[in-house]
Image (cartoon, rainbow, N blue to C red):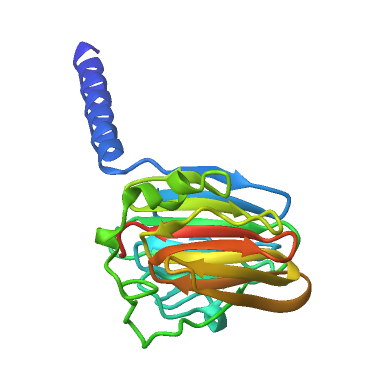
Length: 263
């Protein structure tokens, strides 16, 4: 009896040690809401083996680590999820729009070769499907900045959350990305500021949306996004040189997902 008991204890201790080793080797998953308002909810997901990319409502996915494959009913294919493939754009990080699904079949992104995934998920509360605009630069060639100057030489005191905290609110930051929520009251100019990192930029709210942008030399230009009702437009931007913006229409809101290091 004593021998049998010793065997049971030894087996239990061995199982506990193996569980501890497995737990240490598997990074913890983080799924947290980092920002939300009446139109969007933003979640940060880190160190996960798969991401559910199907659901009843539209969402913008920005994956900043890991290679993503689509899996439906156990069949995995190494490409963007079918529901989002037409909206995928050329960018060092996978970027796609999750369309509302009429099918009950689950769809998910899975990591290859035991890697992990990191992602930002922007859920659209009002049912608006984000529209992705293609980048204006040649494939795979992200410009050094909006005006060609080197961001490493820009004044850190002009970084947007530092120089314009009433407009540019830092809502999340880690070693890889940071997320900034921008509110632009109508006819109020931001202080001069810059954005030192490549960015996934989403303007959401009523249309048309018109802003006046002024660069560091005082040169002005109008930017206009037309449409009717609520909309969401997603663009890829290089680091933004010092400038100031002024909203000429009400309701302009922006979410910036800035890459401190590109994948």
